[in-house]
Length: 116
Image (cartoon, rainbow, N blue to C red; front, side, top):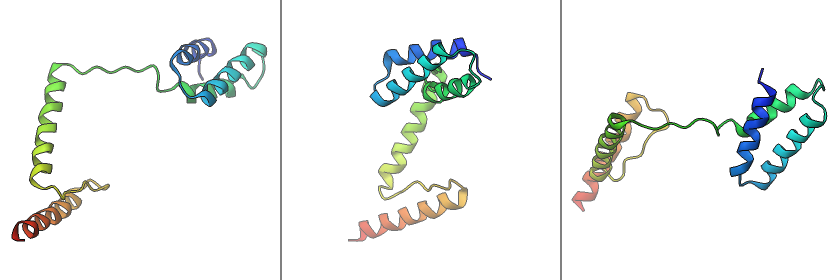
């Protein structure tokens, strides 16, 4: 169960930066319904609908120095791999077997390209 007042406050904050006109209208309509009928049994449904619109707006994550370094290291490794194997594709199923299959295909493509 969501706190109605907090959710409405977050929704009003969300409206300050929202860009999609249809979503803005929907959120404003829900806020108005809650304000007009605060005792309605449907308030919980309206609050839940508001949460669906604004759910991604309150969490801000900042990486620390070690995490930023790890990102750079991973990106460097991945860049080296994709530079070496330009035909490599990332499988949806990220199991070891799938990765081995895609790497094998990329190596074969590289060998074929070099032999031309």
